[in-house]
Length: 202
Image (cartoon, rainbow, N blue to C red; front, top):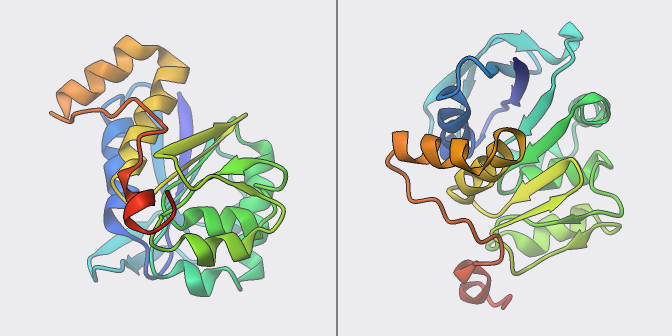
């Protein structure tokens, strides 16, 4: 059983979080999902729907997988030293660190992506790049794997990245089974990224 610490903060993107958690949650015997925030309780998403944080970042729990979504709220949280320190410490201890969309800006500011390849939401690419000058940012990518760190492009790309992570941990057949349960068409090619060109990056 791998414990997933899913970070949430005001202004997080709903699908960034719940799309991947749907995939992991299909394997309930393999993953335990825990929403974490600065303080426990309801946290308002960018779409105003609230999620409930079961734990605070001060609770000191170690997670096997650190999961960081993006969203408009990242533009404030990149200046939050307590949150960035928590990300840095937990990523060091985690077996895997995953981010979706502008969640990679938080990983970058926390130093997690230094000297690594990474990607992010293409509409916000230039802003995210500013958060990590020591990161090898990949403009043309649906998602990028560099060691134990996986970063994805915007919003829905997080589900493709998550299935790739599940395949790495449990095999491709298991990941395909999860995709079929969700009736989701899995884009298996990490380099297939039409949104890079759409945003003037390709």
